Image (cartoon, one colour):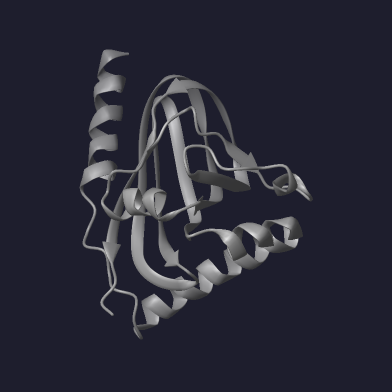
Length: 183
């Protein structure tokens, strides 16, 4: 068991810290594909819950993660990449990482959108100070789910499942790395 835990943490370390450089959003084929994935994710969220439009219209900014992958067996690791919008324009790329420990097993994929209520909350992402804790809970998007949702500590988090199964009772928070795109 100890050997498994050590291997789990080594794997997590590699996934968590050994990422390549974040590419700029521009006219490259990869960047165009990424932007299309993000726009498709936004469209799916709005289609599933049209009342989310108010968050897109009224937030200071938002981060969209088309694919977040989570895997765990006692030690869990989560990662995703996305684009950051400020007042409707792409201003950067962001990576999401999370390491957890506890009673957990499984794998799942989901999409996530984080809305920032004001400049102060948005600046916490841009300065790489944003860390979402268990106190900030995500709203699972279903028809009308966002109608009653609000901001907590300046952020509102929405997720949409893409598949998988995760049994979990763990501790750990999401951390983010923001990189601006050349203007």
